[in-house]
Length: 342
Image (cartoon, rainbow, N blue to C red; front, side):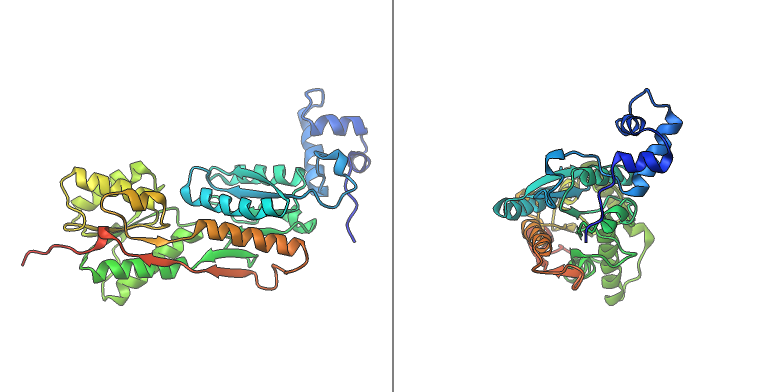
């Protein structure tokens, strides 16, 4: 049985103030003083109030709308995921609301409120750096609105999630670089609070250990994985005699290759490089980049299908919460060999 929707009259009754004051406060009207406004907003959040964005649909249980929150929209991988999601949702007659957290946990919480107020039937989320995957999500659980996490997922709680095995992928890539002759492999990665980067780093460390090499903290370069970060890391690696580089995304790897070449290094004769994701740039850089194939479009199709099947009662996401998709090592010219003089 569905809980009754909370109205401004319920909030007014609880706080013993007029419904018109509640309405003004919720619309951030300056006629209501800040202290009262804060009290009303806090009560509204606690009681699970949703602003009536779709008044005409009040009597309907479904809005045929799915929400998706991603860390950034200017990512080839995320664009592919969204494309895969839309491919499935459009076919099923669902609308898609897309927003980005800009890697900011506070913006993620605001996005969650917007999705809740827009009465989404279900939500797909890839977490921002620093997000715990818990803050802001409680109201969705309370209202039984399904949330499916993908790629960047919570690690402190078991929730419906779709990922790849990032640790194994990191191990495969590092082992490949070592097998191709690299003796000093650096790893350029992202914020270690994010599961995907932390797990790729774990795989990198395990591969070094398996090859009988000790992990050196100086060979782990934590960055924002931007174009600028690739340039800075390339210079640092050259100064420290690196002959192999595993980068946690392709864009940063391409930037790193360009800087190494600018400085007179031959890829792959002097330094071999591997990236991650199989973004378009990995196939268009010179030399083409060895990478991990992370199928974004397919992931988008999988997460949308799972969510819609759950909403349609064909599948319970909580019965098999953790789904791991396949990823493959794609060997290209950037890691073919290192030319070692006797």
